[in-house]
Structures are given as C-alpha cells and as structure tokens.
Length: 141
Image 1: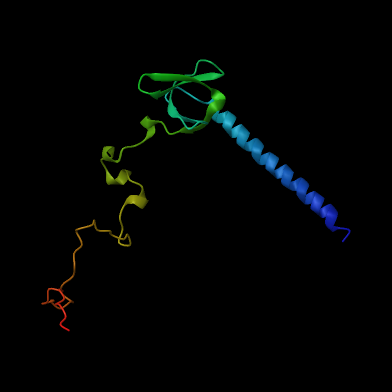
Image 2: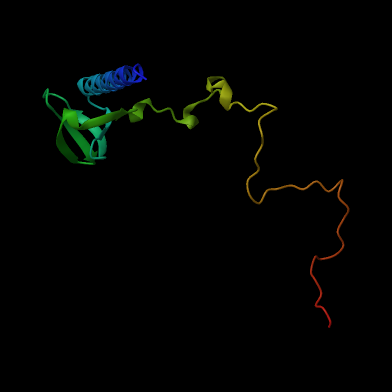
C-alpha cells in the first residue's frame, strides 16, 4: 500500500512529460512548414480558407490568392498545413505507358471485376429458361 502512491505520482509525471514532448514536436513541425513556404505552394489556413501563395517577401506575412484576382495577406502563423501544389499532381491521362503505373493499379487475376450498373451479364447455360412472365394472376375467392 505504501508503494502505490509514489508509483502513481511517477506515472502522472511521465504522462505530463510525454504530452509536452509530443506538443513540442508538433510545434517544431508547424514552424518548419511555415518557414519553408514558397511561391506556388497551396496552403490551408487555420480558418479553413485555402489558396495559393503568391508572395513570401516578408518574414512575418504571406500573400495568398484565395480566388482569381483576390489576394489576401496573412500571418505565417495562420498556415495550418501545406498541400501538394497543383503542378505536382500527375494526371492519369498524361501517362502513356502502363509501365509507369504502380504495380498495385495494374489488374491481376485475383483482382475482382465490378461491372457497371445495367451491364450485368447472366449465365444462361446452367439455368433453365423461365417460360412464365413472373406475373401473378389474381386470386379467386
């Protein structure tokens, strides 16, 4: 019984230490994102607004284009995350060779094939032909 209280105190101190380390790592990651912003980066602000960085000359602020011809000035600290720039996204139509596709996107024998609605084919070899119209006749009482 005498050992439980000191162990509980050590456990609580460990939890506080671990949470502070995690918070510091997140803070460093956020500062790294904010310091490496460049023109053309697509960013999401803490308010949820997304746009493209058009000017990063000031060390405290950035200019973000949120719509065509609409440029706003934001503090760098307001940047929540940096998204992939539109130029870095590969359009599948631009790929000419199937070799350029990742292996996981090339169909194999074990890949299930899903038919589009309305194009379901039925196998009529094994099932007998149904001669009724599947319409029930009215019952007589």
